[in-house]
Image (cartoon, rainbow, N blue to C red; front, top):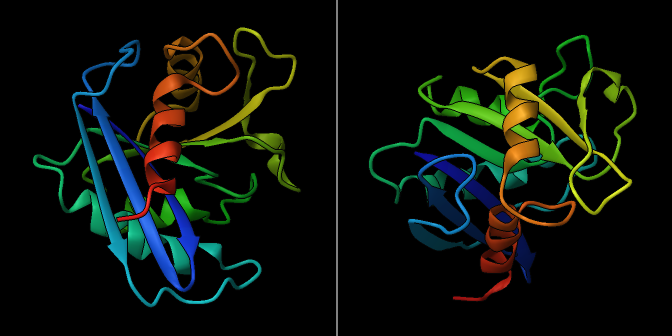
Length: 166
């Protein structure tokens, strides 16, 4: 099982969503989960993960069993030197029991290490990083995900769910 997760914020609360699916080419989710985290911290430049990680851990606690792979909106590694991003922190928080694939929409300074994936209908790449799965394999999987546009459909669905308020 694979999971895509996302978080949105409003008035000090975090709204996390998770969609699970059977394989990388699936066009529909097998399950959808949402949760609200009250009193999330303020955004801290360079430490975005401190705000987002508790929300992701909370929504993933609803998923049984833990997915083999978790796809996040963002970077696993921030640079080629191994500076951890949200995905690396999530991998650690999950005790390494699930691989993490980061799919970012924008280049991050130092993101030359990220695999660039051009999806159908787009001339702008996605930036893929990974932990627990080879980077080339992760990039190939993201490229094959269902959807006719730059953002795969199930990643878009996780984003839409996170925007809904509980």
